[in-house]
Length: 507
Image 1 (cartoon, rainbow, N blue to C red):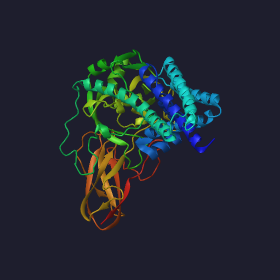
Image 2 (image 1 turned 60 degrees about the vertical axis):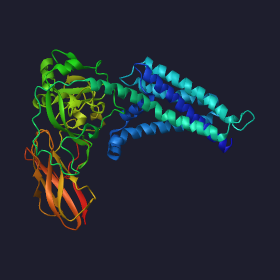
Image 3 (image 1 turned 30 degrees about the horizontal axis):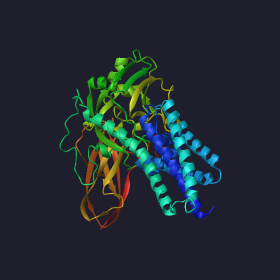
Image 4 (image 1 turned 90 degrees about the horizontal axis):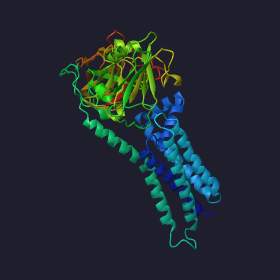
């Protein structure tokens, strides 16, 4: 086989794999109870990956981990398709079987997803496999005839351009087109929602609660900028009109709420800072927002707790689960089933139609998005998604502070300049922030006005910067009198600790 014929065969295989995916994605978008095969495989990879690998991916890629995974799956599919195209030149039957096997892996992954039924993924797989096999055999045969007696004027360049262009369009457009359709539907639903006025509104924001320093993280992080770390490879697009929330487990009176019924319950508004357990010291996986929702205490009192109901487990529509002490839901008044974020219905990325917000706990044990069930269990009866993967079962947020201004490695003009940032210790609050320049004494920074103990506080220290290289460090003291430790620990198993330190050049 010549080099050019091998290239045509590989291109034909890629195009055939792309055609199979495109038809499968189209069918998945039209058939109820079905799932994208590509995304199902990606979710299976996430769920089966060991904890150390997931931690490494988050540390290296941050919020880009999911797009990278989807891209990797698509590239692997393309490479496998190319190999099948080469095989089909001489052994078409095994190559066709390879296409069926490739699609079958996606079907198996989709069948393991709690959101999918059985018939939908099977039909999607049959259509995708039939399309892929047919396309592979036809394209490989056509590629072999290019420039031959039966070419009919077809050129190598035209064949390869058509194959590559069609493959790229199918691989990229198949998944993204379906997701955009789902997103548009949810966006229309969100725009039609009229949030009720909270029975317990958040207190007014003092004018000096936001220092408004250039480069300093705002008091309230806009929804589109708020960090997102979760196990969902793609954002679940939940129809609120069909959604329900069930309260089950060790309760006297289990019950189920529709979205409309949840909105009719008395709600509270609270300013709460959330943090991911994977946030490194000085990292950006933390944010503050104004949340609105139904207090967890009200839901638990309605259900009636039975003896031994020591853990509250939140379950998501995509199968994710997280558990925390029931006492936290009862004692922390601002724990809620949230329906709104910064004055608008929850964005799909942050849990629409409802999610859990629990001050003082890392998200991996508390912040279940796309909430579908609250189950009351014994503490040792259920372990949430992350616990078997090496994370601690208790997840209290550690007292932390961060330097936002100046940025690490920045060039700073000599003279008076602000050193500023944020500090947080939800449920305890921040009482003091101190900054040290090089090996000098700790200097107390000015704190912005307090908004809520569950909310972070901005801080600033005017610094008379002198030319040269300087090291800046920050530490916070929380409302319990605990000073942020200087002992460095990794994010696993219960959150990083240490003091944020940066180096800057003053010129």
